[in-house]
Amino acid sequence: MSFRTNFILQCLSSMAWAGMNWGLFKIIYVHTGEIGRGTGWHENEFFIFLGTIWVINSLIQTVFMANAEEFSELIRTGGLDFALLKPIDTQFLISFPRINWSQVPNGILGILLIIHSMQKLMQEKELYFSVFSVPVFVFYVICGAMVMYSVMICLASTSIWFGRNQNLYDFWFYITNFYRYPMEIYQRNGIGMALWGTFTFLIPILVVSNIPARILAQPLGTPWKAWEWGLAGYAVLGSVWSLWASRWVFRRALMSYRSASS
Amino acid sequence: MPTIEIKNLSKTYRVYQKQEGVLASVKGLFHREYREVHAVRNIDLTVEQGEFVAFLGPNGAGKTTTLKLLSGVINPDHGTVTVMGYVPWERENEYRRKFALVMGQKNQLWWDLPAMESFRLNQHIYRVPREEFERTRDELSDMLDVTRLLGRPVRELSLGERMKMELIAALLHKPDVLFLDEPTIGLDVVAQHKIQEFLKEYQRERKNTILLTSHYMKDIEALCKRVVIIANGSIYHDGSLEDIVDQFSGDKIVTLHLHDDGGLDSLSGLPNVMEVEAPKIKFRVPRDEVGKVLSRILAAHSVDDIVVEDPPLEEVISNVFSQAEEKGRQEASQAATGS
Image (tube, rainbow over all chains, first blue to last red; front, top):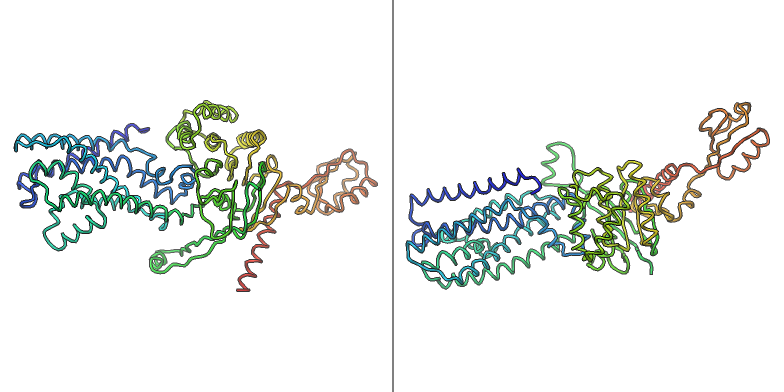
């Protein structure tokens, strides 16, 4: 926040992106009542999903994204040397040195969108949700953030072997393209199922967004099916597994660190 | 037990040899040529507690690589190192609380924030009690005369001021061992002198072990009794500064202040005359001939003053580096022929 104008512009830019995103789906819902027949993702349910995505995105971009990008640069320039000298866990140190506050408004907009959509849902369908849903939602958002963090750390760690890896932001864009939508849209044909399987079990990013959103949006409508309960359990396992894997990759990579000439 | 003990330490880098041009770049996507750089070769070294050792060598000699190995920043290919009983590359927190590395060409402070914020972060990371932290910070900033700059963003500091802040950041946790990699590089004479004085005073008070690399011989003369010379990744010489001058400087420089200009003509014919500025003459004499040459001159001329001194340290060290590099080349060529 040292550069005030830059900070304000970043806030405005991320909020404008959120506004356009909301506008696009508003237009889509003029043409259709539901994304995927029989999926239950009507307008209000979907906006809860969208709000959840904004919250997770905001969390990741506020806390991790700038640091993960910086990590690649630290490796290339040899700045990682100083992180390795400090008597503190190196992965922790490089993961959280900087908070990108300009991404916080996006998260606040996400929360407002969720609250607004839930209110509408309760009015229109006369449904109520349990207060218990909120802590469970928060828990699964944190699980989701852990998965995304792990993916980012693994990708950033590859810079140690490759010397340079500038694909972090691109990769983030590609991946968030898949996790921005309810997983039901993938479950209609072979290619969709392959994508669903890959991004659910191998790189579990679909569970990152779908489980917390479903906790708030779907219980209001339909009761959960057995596979949904399984998926909720897997989301916890997946986040623990992802964290463990990222730590293993990070430590292996550090053993190959060669620093940069001074 | 020595504070630093290095045995048979080696580190080799594999470096990509990029060819010029677009075609070569495309070819490089499919096939690459690499060269092995032996940054450190089978080094043995011991440093006792409280020593202030200079680590000298030409660019690319392996000085910084050795310091990085000692700090645990990189892992060696083989060999053993213990610093205060710890193996550096195991990166134990207990070890990392006891040493510091300062690199003159790299910045560890937050660029956009005042140095004070980096100091505060270090206080928490190194778990320095608040009162002790404030006392040390005030002492160090006072000694280096930067108290008024603590709140200024690092990017707005001059190179010399930034270097002083780097030193404070490295010393806040009172390390027992300090690795200094060219801490005075690029600084003006005043800043260099200030840092030299500070380091001298700091080491005298705390009796900590310091390894210093520098290309400024003034730093070495002012601070270090022991000098280790490294070239081509191997230690070429380990001894006192006087030893180096005695061993590697074949000549002495003699300056005579004659009583009158009359003798200058005959003395100008001496071999290795460096400067004639009547009634003074300056010339080089082989060390073992100084007495003989001077007695001959004194017998023939009236001399008001005589100064006999060693050649400048830069010149001596430059000779040592040349010899060391030549030796390294010969060894490499022999090894290549042998293989």
